[in-house]
Length: 140
Image 1 (cartoon, one colour):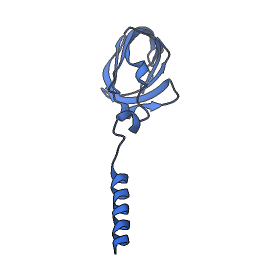
Image 2 (image 1 turned 90 degrees about the vertical axis):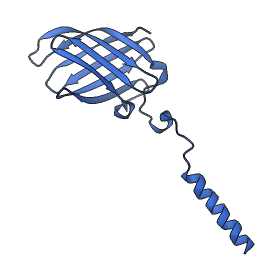
Image 3 (image 1 turned 120 degrees about the horizontal axis):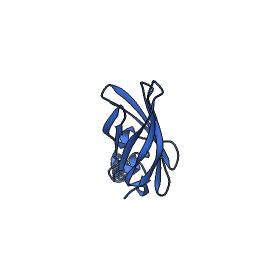
Image 4 (image 1 turned 90 degrees about the horizontal axis):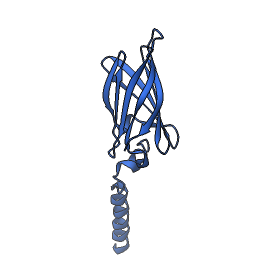
């Protein structure tokens, strides 16, 4: 009887430990979060082309925060976009490259972010044919 009780206690302990989640930080649960070394503000003017193949300059600001939120602000020409992209919407393509998509004001936006030490190669494509790309400089 005593050995049966020990076996039940041991299995119960293993079961309880297996149900506990010791890894509760978001980086261990979501491998798509942008690496913390890329946290900062990136800004620059980029070339944007609309669906009629008209090219214009747009200002882009991308803020990568420590909580895994990426804030994208695009303004200029016929585009005005300000929205947050959360880590759950990010897809890690490689060590320094990520993609995401988001719907805003009836348009679907597809983004690609490729980071280097002090810059961000930024690309977006909107579902109406508007596209833009450029290199953003890390401001802070």
